[in-house]
Length: 145
Image (tube, rainbow, N blue to C red; front, side, top):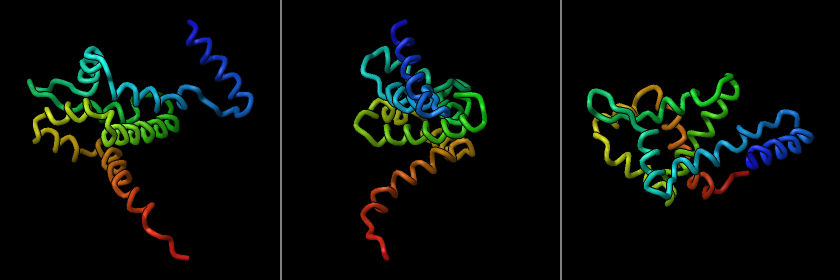
């Protein structure tokens, strides 16, 4: 109850400054990042159940359906949240805290993983991966005037 009261209070304060402010869309990257980097054994099991699904007695990624806008209703919010969630997944995968997520991906059947990663639904994740890979190169390249 206290957490919800604090969310309502913070949202009210922020809403006074910006009428378009949405506490849940703003806090979702932090919550999603926390979900993707569990610290307890129960959290690791929950992550595995969330990210994977059993198909024909084999495990496949369910992550893409989560990233394809099924997280929140409304087209604009869904697209923004999908972009944010995809970037968060890539940030976590590349960071030290993404160890458990990398472990889950490494345990998958490589052929199914490649099929999942090359599917149309994985396009946002591939785009985020490219942006993450190019970011250090882009920052280190001097700008021409």
